Amino acid sequence: MIAVLRDRIMNILADVPDPEIPVISIVELGIVREVSEEPPTVIITPTYTGCPATQVIKSSIREALDSAELSHVAIKTSITPAWTTDWISEAGRQKLRKYGIAPPPSREAAATAAVECPQCGSTDTHEISRFGSTPCKALWQCRSCSEPFDRFKCH
Image 1 (cartoon, one colour):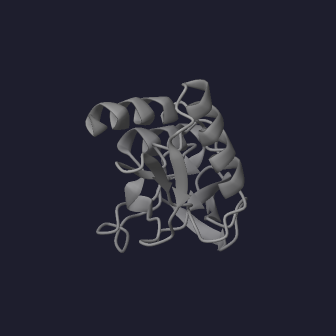
Image 2 (cartoon, rainbow, N blue to C red):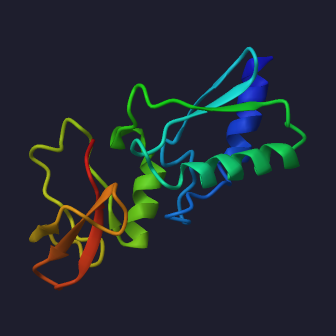
């Protein structure tokens, strides 16, 4: 029974966009961590502790669940374990790239992976500021096309 409810909830939440990056859903971004059974609860983990979008995300989830007549499903925020960029789905990584945000590599590849410019594909890039458009991103620039771009901080 929970598998059916879980799948239904995940399908509903797959249409809830991240408030800061509207081209990617909260499921693709890995914010929706799980759906527990008793009582039915959606467990979310923000991209970092203190993320200002967390309340908007919870409100969007509540609205989506209520619209689907699932008002009995609770929403819980958990910061343990901490969100990691490894939770971003492959489809989410592609959407980030198309949107102009360099998706992070997997944790295993992070130490050696070159950062690819989402505009031109060059790996001749460099970080220009540890602080990007949101606290979970850093500002990078491509030396080939000179375009600046956000990159998720790997964590």
